[in-house]
Length: 140
Image (cartoon, rainbow, N blue to C red; front, side, top):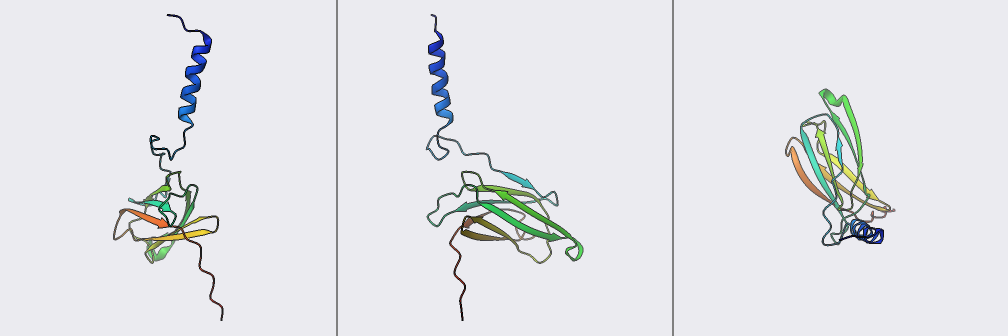
């Protein structure tokens, strides 16, 4: 059986259309979770950033400032963005930090949220951050 060039083009087009399917479609596999390595210890934290109606937030920015070592002399600033599933993982975090807990601050446009994490109490953890609009400052 011979297949002409048009048959190959049609098959290639069908594969291409399937690969471009939305990452949120029911049959699409989860995206690879971005990983940022602090290279400062054995602990890790996986975060999931969602909206108030539990939808994942794509490209939310998560920042954390880590001070560790004797008297907090060592410092580490980490920043990462979430994937389409709202996930990101921080690895290589120190098991003891100066003035715990660490505050992971997430933001996307005007939306913000935080997660507290104490690596001494839970070295390998998973937390959720729900983004909300910031509350207006109280004026006197």
